[in-house]
Image (cartoon, rainbow, N blue to C red; front, top):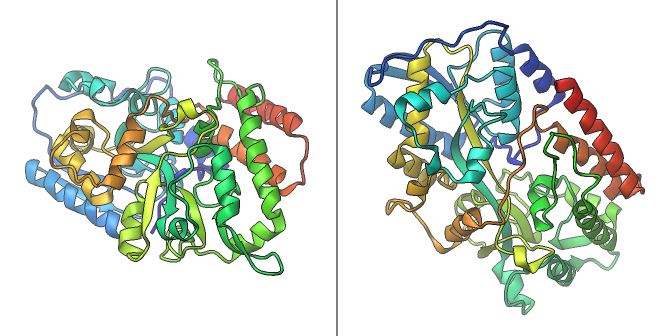
Length: 441
């Protein structure tokens, strides 16, 4: 299983960033001319995506539906790809006609470099109403007025909790505040006589599974960037609030003990996932985890809830991101490529079928309310988080996810105790990010 959420998502490396720069359109390069409205697409299209196994099967099925509707188009599908491979191929003048990325954070780079084609002319020609997409989704599929990506499906983050462990401890329900999360984490933790962790109520370490600063920032309402694209991390006191809360809990466990415990846990995407095995009582994760639990850990009784927050007025919101899809600047058949993108991202029946198959959140308002959408009580929690006014995403940037990577690097050092100056460290993070922004232009 290959999926990087957060995201799922901070695998946009310096190599990938460099490759994006080489993928930039040369001055004067012209986009392929648009066909007249209503002209039927034909020819061959190559689609690259990152899904494998069960999720890849859902992609294959929806591609068959596309080909049935567009019999003059033949789609070749290559699964198990990642953004770096795609960027290497585009930089070499090759690659797919249509690329599906796991990272909304890459959109700024895709758009600013020209690696993906500006879709605005196609959207305007075909009369696509972007108001069908919630504002938070529209925000992560364009950069500086250029819409080079369309939303595939959305991902929403919440708190999973083990109902059996809760019941045995006499806990009535999930925590709603960070203070309550701390209290429950301590109550539900089990240690051996020597202090070794046997079960963590909540594992707070940054870098564990989906514990990224992007996913946790909404718990305090922390801001990433200023309006001019420079870093707001060092000047926003909310970051210090979040990090101090996390570090206090890390210190309660003992950093070395946490690291020893983490080393014995299973891979996030395997059946040995720590939550599957009851090694953690609460865990941050996306809506897709439900499908994995029901497939790989059928005996686990779990509940889901919005992430706990510092301010109770924010409870119910969270973090949203998703997969994005676009037409490569090296596409050999732009019209057929756009026809595939349009089918996957604008046709309600296709979006709903994908959501039901992959168990991600639909990206359009009509798909969200479709009677064909499979909605159980747990999935509804994620739909409610998605629709909450306090739900946010990470802002697009010309440096891609580099601003998140800079903070993540500092947090690894800070939680380990090798760096102790929080305010000073965050100011250095600001400087590093601002230098990258300046270099990016």
